[in-house]
Length: 449
Image 1: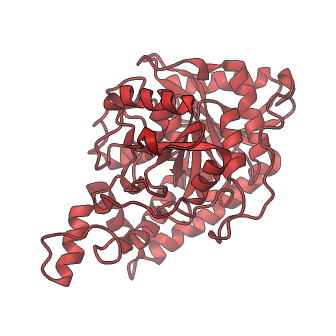
Image 2: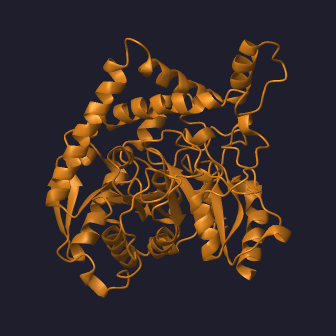
């Protein structure tokens, strides 16, 4: 319990600066030994779950998400709920009804999104472990911008029961920690089939920590890493230099590094924002002030209930995505947009499968830039969406991926290496990431708070 109390004291001290937590649990209601933070779109019994949206203000879940329940059984103590882009729709945690979260490395900059609160909380050492959610990179991207480890498991590896749906065919619960070992241990706890979730896999759960201390340079010796050509061919500046340095580290550990082409990769952002927004428009239709969500006090008629409740309850970014998704699914446009995007997605799965037939891992930078200033991209949605350019493909094909700190730029802001593995290849992925982490030790640096 002492670690939990230390965590609460750190949250009390730092959260006014970071706005990483939107709800903090009282010390008298805590049980467990390991402090854990939960993104506020994951259900927690007796604790508000609002998705950082006005439409769910005051909602308290009557049950725990399966991942939360398994963490509690393991001995975790949920100390609070973390800030996010409303309904997980964003890449900066600026689209939150609670106001933006801030990056511990520079309070004028974003922590990434949509799991920015979780990443900021771990980076600032408020908690050692946080759960986030992924639809197009919402764990790995903020982990990268905050200098911590972010993991997206294979689709179906972790139950989605209790995760408020954004895009059901892409959504996953992910993990943010300081180190690879911590992430591997947490995945071993929350992974596995769940009868509540028909998409959860029955594939056996590996011991993800078993080989992480394997000796010296043997961890990745002889392993084949494919550098995705389409991701890096136009990359330049400090991100490219840092990525090249990361490849040098892997070569020094005995890995084989070669280029590999994923021809469909340039279409990933377009495909992602059609598929995700289409599914979002369907999933969020339930929040109408009648079945779910706060009802507008102004409403006089049934039409008013729908229009006013959703108009008042949803923020601008959520409205934008609902409209884009509804358009993509509308009569006369379904085949031109949604159906075509799904065909390209199927081709992308084929391209990744071919690449994994030749390589153990695929590598890219996690993000195309370090953390940007708050407000810099809020009026330019396309520029914001492009922050997912390296992370969205893993969601589209369902493979596991990890973001691991790879250094800092000239502004002393974190940069990150992304390692992707074949489906259910998490054990080998953790082994490779841990070898890189041991060789570099960037995780030991702390933000100057």
